[in-house]
Image (cartoon, rainbow, N blue to C red; front, side, top):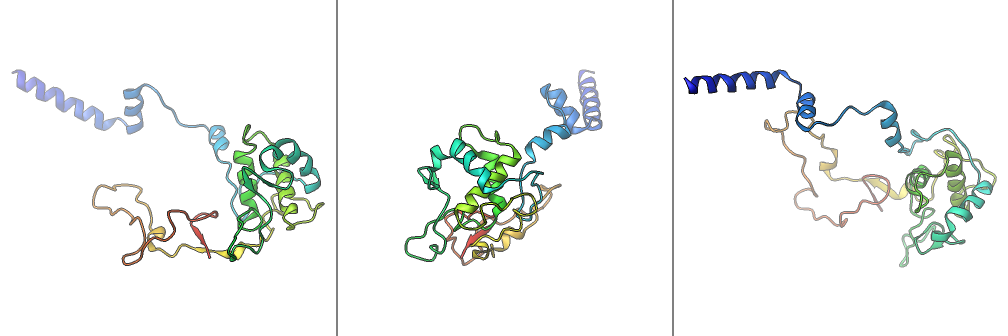
Length: 220
């Protein structure tokens, strides 16, 4: 009798658990968690793509950005934009020489990457504290100091995406076939194959694990 009751109890529990959605089971089990609101998601969705998608409204010039840079950036990057925390200017045309200098002006392929990084992580002591206008202005100042734009040229969501960086054509798509594999999204344990990680057979990985700035691209 005891065995029959135990079996019945197990069967009932199994039936109930299969009828409860997975997220509900997780909430019941751990006692916390909820779906993120649109406002919360918006706070994390701050990336700016090379084509300008993701850039917010706003505008700024290098002339406006000079004062912001001197107040918020100069401590780390120095007045000549070549401070101890990384060079931001210079080095254009040096990448193929014996002494290449990788800076925003000489190496980065897209001006929108500059806006994205400044907005996301700068200044070092107070990231994401600059307004959109201030980020546009600082970005314009860095581009101006690299000789890429004029001092009075306004940078905004449209003009920044159209800036042609000196090393735009110095990057190419990663040719390894595994980077084009589609990641498994469901039923991955029922025979789905995992993407190959690493170079194709017979080829060695000479990148040292670094693909450069620009997402999946390697410098020529």
